[in-house]
Length: 333
Image (cartoon, rainbow, N blue to C red; front, side, top):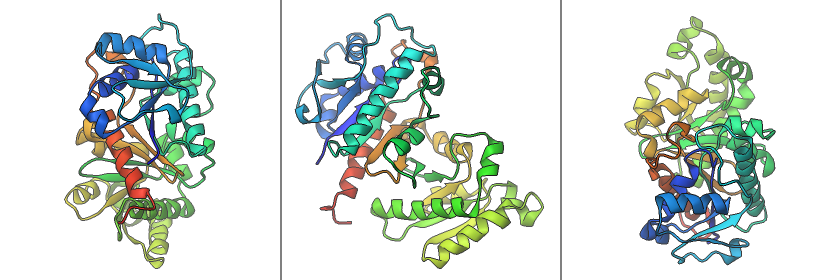
């Protein structure tokens, strides 16, 4: 099995803290091995503060990673100053976060790793650094040459895949089309099959209240979403909808559906996060490699306080290993 690379996130946020706290648990890392791509100095400083027993060592590449090492092994991709202010948007931190991601994606493209697990980055810091991507998802897709991709949020009770991601509500509505809707439904079907679900049951959330109420509250559900579902069903995909967004997640949580296709960012993320951020994982589906991430941000408000919880990052790492095993050609589903 190829190794997992974890990127260290935005150094002005909680990324380095939750990374060192994760690696400080030897039993957990023995069961879920990984190395880190990021700033070795920032990680050493974080370890000195929040995981003093953790040894941090540099490695040149994935081939030097030792899964049984009782250490945080780091491929260093930047040299941030020790006095970097915490809890503030920093162009330097944005550049370092992107450098780590770029290197990890290069390793994945070269087939030297099987998965990337990413600590959170800050979109304003990326913009301040001149990075032309609004987030991890778009960065991963373009740098891996992937056109058919999506953001899936997963926890122990729900899965949701987004039709539109990082854009305004107005732009989300403008971007909807039968072709886009159908592409995401097909992607949901393939992705769930890749996760070991032979016959996925997919619910598609409506855009408007009551899924448009027959056109009274808007025609997008009738004119865009419904035709896409009909086409998917004609292809043998078990998709239903459009269903009212205020109840569809409840039914999925009770086991009626394996996944909900959500029309815009907050429609899909609010139900998952409401059930507990520590249990939520962001999975970029459609990539030629596995990518997972915790379901939270950089938490600038608590950066440097030592109170950041690593549980969501740990869940993301566990999920990365599970998805790698599920996608392995030698795995029987």
